[in-house]
Length: 257
Image 1 (tube, one colour):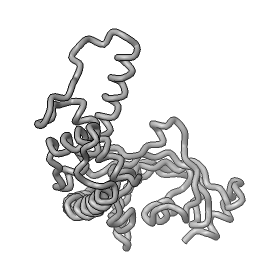
Image 2: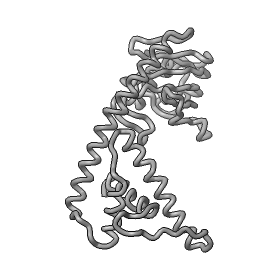
Image 3: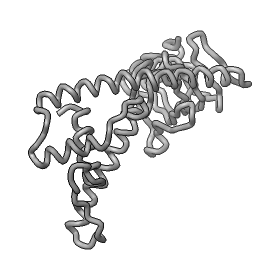
Image 4: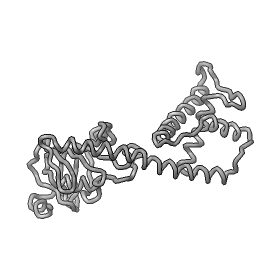
């Protein structure tokens, strides 16, 4: 079962448990949860409901609406063994729905993110202390470092927080409680370029245009919409060579671009 089929099937389940079918009263308990079995059943339903709610919200953000009464009717028909579509027909329809949602999200959310990103970049570029590179990367020095600078072939250890232009945090090593280590040539271009401007001990703020980030791809299950401008606050803690050992100042200088 593909990823779209599961959410739609779960949508039907949740909505059927939460409402009444237009065809037939569907039993929903209004009693207080007293027994362990009742609590377990309710926990399962509420867990599915939260998941489906997020899924339906994402579809509606892309202007793809499903009639909820029809979803409920499909679930009830399946329970009664009176499904009006074969499994093959349903799978084809749901695959088509998945394609539509993906295309619509790219068009609707991508256009919105591109407009917001461009406006943010223009405003940010005019601020004192902000430098714009030839590629379009914007950076601001929050704290200057005194150690070596990484080359593209180096591995770095960093603490960072990433947000969208609306301030929503989508990733943070601070929240995880530990820094991240990665090869500098295996991340988005904005990171590869930006961190080479830094020295160990430095802290910078980067505004990365979509073309230096994830482009028109949607990332993180919708956390990062297509065409998103990304903002990262980055602390460069350590520079390592490709063997994983600390790089000395000579190696860092010779390999810098």
